[in-house]
Image (cartoon, rainbow, N blue to C red; front, side):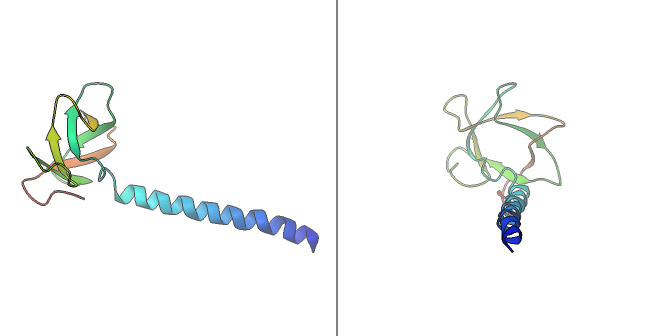
Length: 106
């Protein structure tokens, strides 16, 4: 009986940890790029994220704004004081974006 309980506790802990990891994975795939909004600087190197611009199959719809950049999907392009540095790529992207006039966000 003592041997059985010795293996039970680590097994339960392992199952619990694996279940937490799977929930985080689902959350990450559903919210790709949703946290990237605000002041954006486009760079060639030293980027925070690599982004591919697409016409369909996007993870995030963005709208370029002059003000009100504190909402999901609103990007204000700046040269300094940026919140995120973005590099535009054709492949190997962290997430895909589509530029829209309305309906921005995830």
